[in-house]
Length: 53
Image 1 (cartoon, helix red, strand yellow):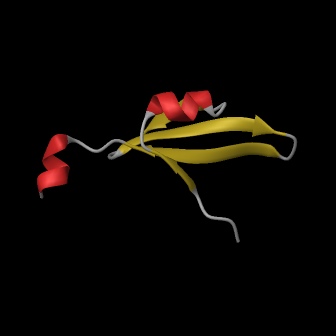
Image 2: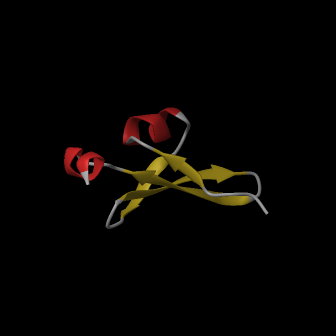
């Protein structure tokens, strides 16, 4: 089974061909169209506070 692709910025996801689909509690859900259908990935946005916790 393949893992879930995770990005650390929206810019990285968009550069990889994804578009923002929805907001989550930790970032965003992004998607891209493939020959097999939609591919999903997550963008996890970490705040400065989470680095020091």
